[in-house]
Amino acid sequence: MSASRGVFQAVVSANRQIGARFYKLKLEFSGAGAKAFASARPGQFAQLDVSGAALPPAEKIPEDLADVSRREILLRRPFSFTDVTTEGNKTVVEVLYCVVGPATLRMTTLLAGCTVSVIGPLGKGFRVPEGKNRALLVAGGMGAGPLQHLAKVLTSDFGSIDVTAFAGAKTVKELPFERRLDEISQQLGFWIPEFGKYGVNSMLATDDGSTGFAGPVTDCFWEWLGQEDLNTREVIVYGCGPEPMLARMAEIAKLKNIDCQVSMERRMACGFGVCQSCAVECRTAGSGETIYKLCCEDGPVFDTGEVVF
Ligand SMILES: Cc1cc2nc3c(=O)[nH]c(=O)nc-3n(C[C@H](O)[C@H](O)[C@H](O)COP(=O)(O)OP(=O)(O)OC[C@H]3O[C@@H](n4cnc5c(N)ncnc54)[C@H](O)[C@@H]3O)c2cc1C
Ligand code: FES
Image (tube, rainbow, N blue to C red; front, side):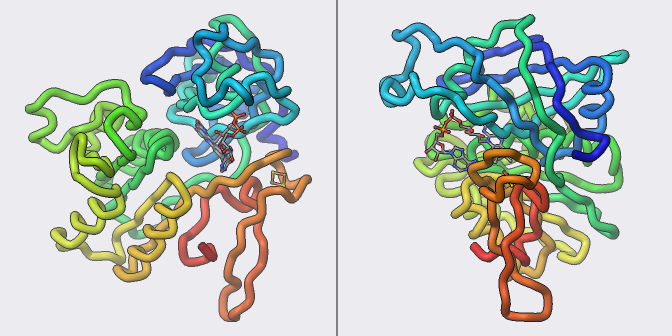
């Protein structure tokens, strides 16, 4: 492992439920961990060991997870960050997570003061190419997490770049946000407080039309692109979400000739290039051949032009 990453003990400073299955976990690092995570970039991730966390009481286990809940947690689990802040000699990393299986179920019982073993920061995050003055962030479901971190960094470190965010889910209850802004804020285009707090305009989409645009977030994005007069060479699109959504973003980027980076997900055992479990098929420049890159080391962020969806 490189000097900037390692295995660190983090202390849980908060673990708050923000929706039926959504939680925000804050991990506080000191010493070498604080130094390593202070420079964590949006789109990077960490491997959390939650094998020691307790199961919630039976009545708090969702019915669909009852069977899998008792499975032993042998492997660490990868999570990206919604925010990274430094306070004195401490670094606090915020993770937005959704309860989908045994590890994330156990994570819900982590209390403030618990320690968690964390490997990170890992992978390569989102990059900001030269000459861009417009960034468009497109999130599907939990993909909103790392794009919030990206919105913060783009607005604080790249002031000349104008940022707009799009976020979607199947239905309003599956949008991983704490609350929506009032009607006036929505009329001004600030639908999502998590982006609005950085001055970033945002739009919501739900497949069932329960809020915002009715349809997939990629349709909302496509329709919006059709109404804008953009100099596409100056635009960069960033995406994070389920793979079919990322594949559609790759099509849109190709059609419009816009640079696009997406954060890919693979099942990960090690997270740092040893187990080879996280292959992503990629094109090689100038030939019709493809090669396998590692999601954990070469990604998780890839240019859509290189990925074979
Ligand atoms: C780079 C990266 C960053 C991630 N960031 C976040 C995050 O910020 N917040 C968050 O909630 N989740 C994130 N995930 C996904 C998270 O790692 C899984 O949800 C978690 O490992 C599930 O563990 P579990 O034991 O609760 O459920 P499991 O039983 O392991 O999985 C439950 C279901 O989710 C599917 N699944 C689990 N992991 C993946 C994966 N990596 N790719 C595709 N399908 C998967 C499984 O096939 C299964 O159907 C990220 C994954 C990657 C690779
Ligand atoms: S997760 Fe082990 S090589 Fe990528």
